[in-house]
Every structure is written in structure tokens, then in C-alpha cells.
Length: 254
Image (cartoon, rainbow, N blue to C red):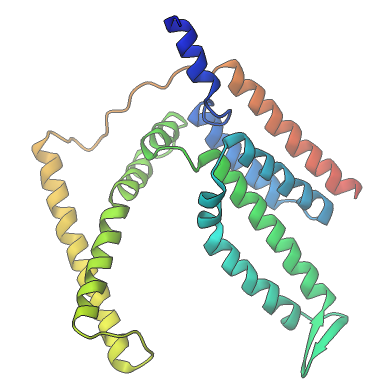
């Protein structure tokens, strides 16, 4: 197999979304999220969810990874599905003792679930597999504030470190007999934990700042030039635009 054939074979195995320019993915994610949030009808929101699922398949995201990333959102959505039908006034569909399930509350909850899931899955398909460095370069190339870009890259870099620090603090508390509860002593321990994490964060930030200055950091990250956009980016931008127009047309007609 020649080098050109090997390169073509590798490109063929790359998911369609991954082959797009990060700027295209970022702009499309924001554009589609705004388009989805502005929908009103049930049919249009269901169509947006179907389009988001199609993007997930195009990105070839592992189903288990998808479920883990959506777990927190779905937990909140489950709470909405329970509370809104019981708290929003409307025609009663069923009664549970003194509580009644209203049609308006159930309808509102379903609309929120569809909107949030469609927007979250769209963002996950387009940005979920995008490395923080590539995301930072794309944001800088699009003219986003350099301070904000730097903040995003620092958060991505040190999130795992601070998560490990919190786990170590919890382990040390459990080794000393701490048990989670609603007692006053437990809340005092949580307060001490928060204070300790804040102190450790400040100390680490100072060490990181000193280390970066020793390496000649002048307040700006050197960012490589981004490659020109290709025909695939233009075709996907056209696809996203057509999808948004079709969803809003369906929203008006339904």
C-alpha cells in the first residue's frame, strides 16, 4: 500500500464531524443551539432532537460515553417531569391525593426536555470530542477575548487536578471517621473542606504563575495559525443552515 493510499484509508476512518474545522464546529454549535432554543412547537422540537441524534451518529460517539455525559442533565429533567405537572395550573389529567397532574404542566415539561436534550446532544456531537487546545485556537481565531480563551484553556488543564485534590480530601476525611449527614458537624466539615480547597487552589495558582514566568510567559499563549476551511466545512455549514430553516418552517406550519 502506498503512502497516499494509507493516508486516504486513515481519512476514511475519521468521523465526519471530526474532519471539520474547529471553527466550523464551534459556530455551528452556537448557531444550532440558538435555533433550537427559539423553537416553540412540539413537532419542531422533536425534529430538532432527531437532527441532534443524527449528529451523534455522524460523530460516532460511544453510547456509554453519551449516557455518562447526559446523566446529570437527565436527572434534572426527571425532576422537572415530576414537579412541573404537579405545580403548574391547568386541566387535571389525574389526581394523586391532594395533588393533580395538569396538562399544561406536563406539556411544558415535555417541551423543556426536548429542547434541553436537543441542544445538549448537538453541542456534544460538535464539541464533545474537541480537544481544549483546538477549541482555544478556534475561539482565538474567531476573535473571542484572549482572556476568556486563556481561562477556558486553564480550566480544561487543571480541572482533573483539582478533582483529584477534592477526592483526596474526602478520602482523608473518611479515614478520620467522617460520614455524610445533615448534622451540624457535617456542615462544618464541608465548610472546612471548601476552605481547604480554596487555599490549595490559590497556592497552586501561585506556583503555576511562577513556573510560567520562569519559562518566559509574557501573558499571551503562542497559537499556531489555523488551516483554511475546506469544502467539507462549507457543505456542513450549508447543512446546518438548511436544518435550522427547515425546523423553523416546521415550527410555523405545525
